[in-house]
Length: 187
Image (cartoon, rainbow, N blue to C red; front, side, top):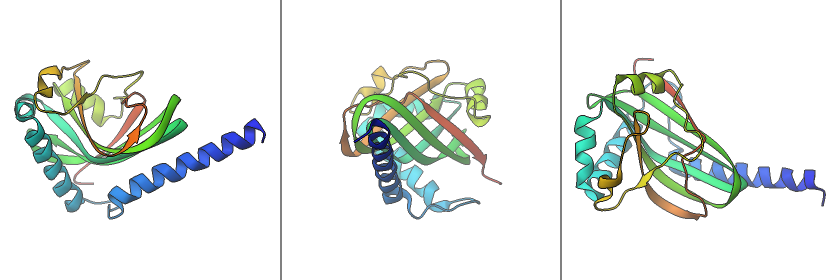
C-alpha cells in the first residue's frame, strides 16, 4: 500500500471517528438561532464540574466569563481532530454559542468524549475569544477535574482550562491547536 493511500485511509478513519463521537453527543443541536437544549446541557455540565470539585465555584464567581462545552468528541490515528459546541457566559448569564475545532498531528491514537470549561480572567481575554483570536497553540495546560483539582487551575494569558472525561480512551490529552468561533445569542 502506498504512503498516499495509507494516509487517505487514516484520514477517512479519523473523519468517521470524529463524526461518530460528535453526532453521538449532539445529534439534536440546532443550526442557527438559540438552542435551549444546549444551554440546559451547559448548566448540567457546570453542576457536574462543581460536584466533582466544589473549589471551582471560586472561578465561576470571579471569572469575567466562561465557555462551557458539554461534549467534545475527539479521535485520532496519527492525525487527530476534535469538535464541540458550547455556551458562553458573561456575569453568569448566557450571551452566545461557541464552536471549538482542533486538529493535532503527532503520536496519538484513540477516541474520547469530554467536557471542557474555559474561564476568562478579564474583559480582554473574553474579547479575544469573541473575536475568534483565542487559539490554543502548542500544548496549553488543562487541568482534569477531580476533587481538589481547582487548586492546580491557573490562568495563562487570561485563560484557564478545565476538562472532565466522559468516555473513551486516548493516548494524548491536550487542548493545543483548539480554535473557536463565537456567535451572540441574539443572532
